[in-house]
Amino acid sequence: MTGIPPLVDIHNHLIPGVDDGARRPEEALAALEAMRAQGVGRLIATPHLDAGVTGRSDAFADRMAAVDAGWATLREIAREVPEVEIARGHEIMLDMPDVTLDDPRVRLAGGSCVLVEFPRLQVPPGSASALYRIRGEGYLPIVAHPERYVNVDVERLDLVDEWRRMGARIVVNAGSLLGGFGPGARATTLAMLQEGWVDVVGSDYHARPGRPLLLAKAYEQLAEWGGEDQARLLLSVNPGRVMDGEEPLAVPPLELRRWRRLRALFRK
Ligand SMILES: [Fe+2]
Image (tube, rainbow, N blue to C red):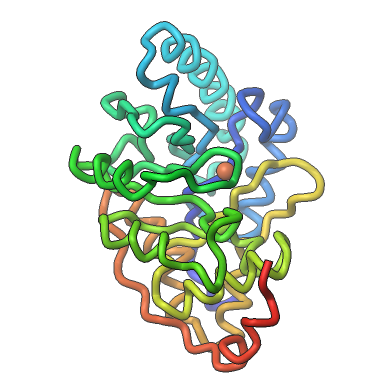
């Protein structure tokens, strides 16, 4: 992997026993080793959290107690993989438009960026204003895998455009780029890359069979398409900036003439 800079991942489910990601410490350790093998030098673990829970103090305290325990386990395990620096955050599902972000544990590496998603892979009405409110509170919302939502596709990128104009940023899954979520999600990902609307590529790695870790492959695929600059920004520079609490840099539109011609064939 000569020439590939140290990669940084801001979306994965490595904290054991707290969501649909790593179940046991051994799975989390194997996941960290896989990260190291792919050249990941830094990552933020992002277990699921419902926005509704952030507003209910008892439920939130219970949830944080569970995640704190899992995080302590992951930190212990990570001593065996010292090449990979770890931090914590959450992937917050906006099951309701209001979310309380005061606690640094819910934000990415405790900084100003927050990873958000929408329920049931369907974008609800009012999504842009929910993101705008988060922005208004001084945080940077980063929307996870828009390419996977049923109401976002190559012919309907207007929501993504609207979110970006509200100040939100976008992280796509490495697997989407490589076709792992089907031709529709891949075409949507490529269309967004061609617009320059993708800020970060994340792994969304669940440390379970059937969903491989594809960060290095995504980097290589982008480079093969002539997008080495974009690959560096999407998989190293920008996620590194997010981890440091800084805004991602603009990513130049990716030129993919062949895909532009073919994209109509890859509707969901
Ligand atoms: Fe996720």
